[in-house]
Length: 100
Image (tube, rainbow, N blue to C red; front, side):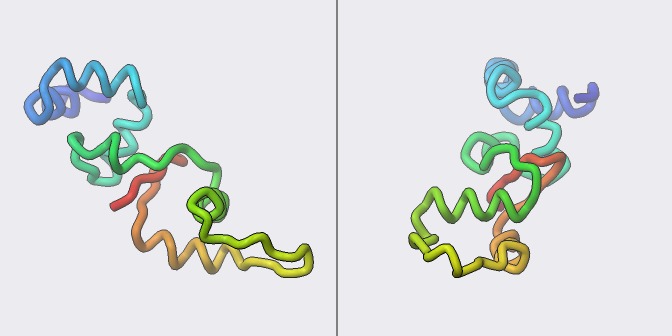
């Protein structure tokens, strides 16, 4: 984080809250949130984790919330297409995903 970003954080959420955010989820997540225009006060609520691709993020997201039934081995999900649709409600920077 650069000086301007740190100053903005302190003004927006306070020094103690900034220290908490830097400890968990960490500086890289905060920088990604800045790049995605996520308000600092919403980082913890909006953050969905780190994933290597949109497709893997969406597959994990939908499987975790029970939206993908136990399908037979011969049924395939087009995760690329599904990710394009689901990503309308999410944003990503450096592998960090946020709900918008």
